[in-house]
Amino acid sequence: TNELDTLYNTLLIVRTLSKYIVQTVPLDASARHFNSPEIVAMEATTTSPPTIALKHVSRYETSVDELCYYLHQFLIDSVVSPPTLKVHSECIKLLTVLISAQLYHDASRSSPYIAAIMSGRCSRTAPALISKLLHNTIREVEPPVQSMWSYAWSYVPFSGGVDTCSAQEAEFSRECLLLTLLLANHNTQADNPYRSALFTFGHKEANSHNTSFVMNLDKLYSHFCKEETNEGRTLLLYNLLQGNSNVKTFILSRTDLEHMLLPMLQVLYDAEAHTTHHMYMILIIILILTHDDSFSSYIHDLVIPSVPWYKERVLTNISLGGLLILVILKTIQANITKMRDKYLHTNCLATLANMSSKFHTFHPYVAEKVLNLFTTICKKYSKIRNTLLGLDTSISIDTSQDYMESECETLEDIIRMFLEIFNSSICYSGKNNPVLLYELLHKRDVFLPFQTHPTFSTLIVNIDNILGYLNQKLEERTESSGVSVNIVMEVIEEVTRAWPADRLQATPVLKFEYVEESQPEEFFLPYIWTLNFSNSSLYWDTSRITLNVFAS
Image 1 (cartoon, rainbow, N blue to C red):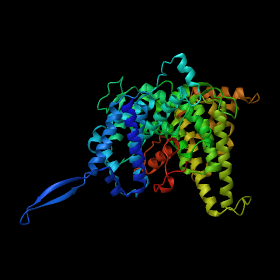
Image 2: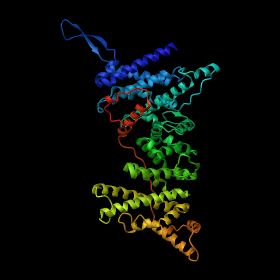
Image 3: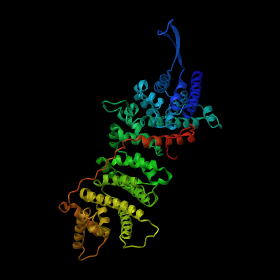
Image 4: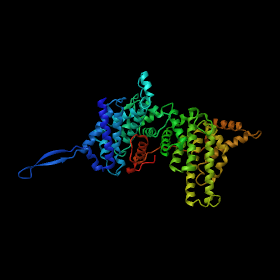
């Protein structure tokens, strides 16, 4: 214990001094503070008589390399236990502090600390370090066996009992997660051994080849299913789905996806209580998942008994796919009225488009919400377009021409995407979705202005054809009797049993694939540092920071 205390105190002092150095000293000079310069005697042969000259040989790069390497080795080789936890935590904090040099200096300058971590001996230990950090992130600590007296002591104020240990374990888990994200999201355009290790590990139960390491992906998946969704965990899931095909395949094969998706959908639903970047990452994760046809089909078969956090109405026995559509629709509506972020609604609509060919067995409420939002958007578009054409003067004269043209263009893009989604659903899954057909028939008038619209006329051919066919069959049935909901549904179900494929024009399956930006670190590094500021116990002097980090 004394040796561990000495090591902990030493690391604490080194970390404190390092933090001051990287914040205040120029990069070129800061690494020299880790060096103990050697003085080497050299014989001069060009003078007579020969004289001895002394030369100071700087080895600071090697010293930084050695420090980072030994930190790696301790984290990899030492077992995490209650006595060693604080030492492991200090090692992670010290590595984080060394990497943070980029926060305080010109981003174009190469950091000797990152160079040491990304190359040499450290690079060879990268897979083992990422493996250990991930295991520490998801590890479940067994509570220590305690006597009656130790239980009593844990309830004494300031005694540092079980609750304190749990808090330390939770903080240590966050530190490991954030360091993993920092290491994997540097140098994304160059050779980053940590990123490669994160993107190539596999499941220990599978016969994986060419993997950096293996781990229990069941435990990793359980980590992503925790009810309290935090941004670091979401960002790790994004990294793995985007870059690690082994993890992506494993997750898509799960039959309990509701445990992972429901907490994320709740974050999107309660968007005002969360950061915009957290919303973006969840939407991208869902977009990546919906690119897989089996996922899009499966979530419509998975029934959720109840959704207590959904406030608009009581939802019972709704499919996971239906709930996902409701949350996406709410996000689109909020974005149109408040945020007006084109990138956000593009991702939302791309997600719906990816699912459209697999839509089936809609809950009536889902179909109603889809058509209600589409109708609202169409009315707003029509009003703005008529104003621009001089046919409507009800919009305030203070509204600029440029704003209305931009708004009109945005709404036109949204309507185009909705029409493509309806078209795709009718062509590929219409016979499995009578409830959606009912709502389309009920709101048929909203499509009439688009028949002669230069942009939309070709997109509503299939919609017009199938709705006209349904209307014809409905008129034949109701010539001698009145129309009721039951009769309409009977007619629709009869038509779907003998689906008139010959009336539909061939249309390609809608598929939108997420492609990461060419320099992802420009977004992710500021984001990860922002998470460090808000989740780490370290104090950061934000007044000195030059990197453009996001507001927390």
